[in-house]
Image 1 (tube, rainbow, N blue to C red):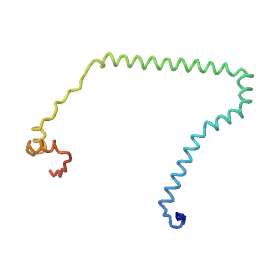
Image 2 (image 1 turned 60 degrees about the vertical axis):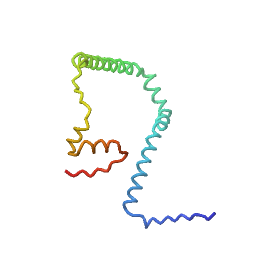
Image 3 (image 1 turned 135 degrees about the vertical axis):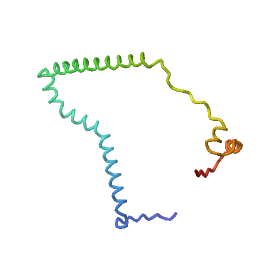
Length: 137
């Protein structure tokens, strides 16, 4: 089996190819770093655990945290009630109505009138597997 020789000559690459390769490479590196963020966060969390312990546990910072959670809970509850009430109002006002009008199926005669060709030709075209249409109007 003959050995395959790969020749890489950067001088032969065009400007557009270089820009495309660099853009794609940068994009993929960005995705890789984005996927690596949870690991970085864990490392930083472990390194900063002492700071968290001092500021939250020893200085009783968790009471502020619970106050914040309580305020956020009330805010979320109020937004939920407002949106749920609005949805219920819309359902009562518009939910039971059906304003959509049904359209009847198009007949062969209507197709023939629209495309200005005989109805027999429409029937032939409907039974064919492939139709080449040269539409000039």
